[in-house]
View 1 (spheres, rainbow, N blue to C red):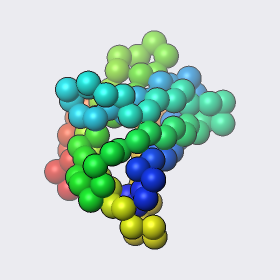
View 2: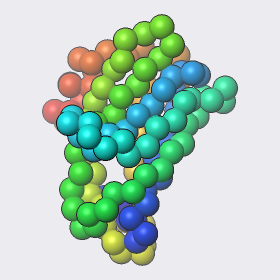
View 3: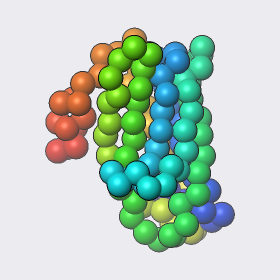
View 4: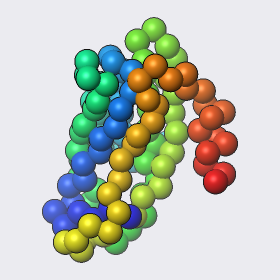
Length: 111
């Protein structure tokens, strides 16, 4: 659950330097929520508006590392209008130097 009284949500994570991270409003990809490039420190940060509060979002996240094919996954979050934090949302993988395969994420979606 993500609390966003102003409808603006911040996304952060870590990964391989130079990797492009894009967060879309699901597989239709008709609205880019936010994008970032992972910096020399291995961290990235972006924010975007999720207008429907008290709603569930299935976000489509794509990672494109230099010289590698794009990897994607879907993560579901719930956005609430309350002004207190219930549980912050962070995309924490892939980590610096990790090998990412689509099968890894499909397996984790079943947990």
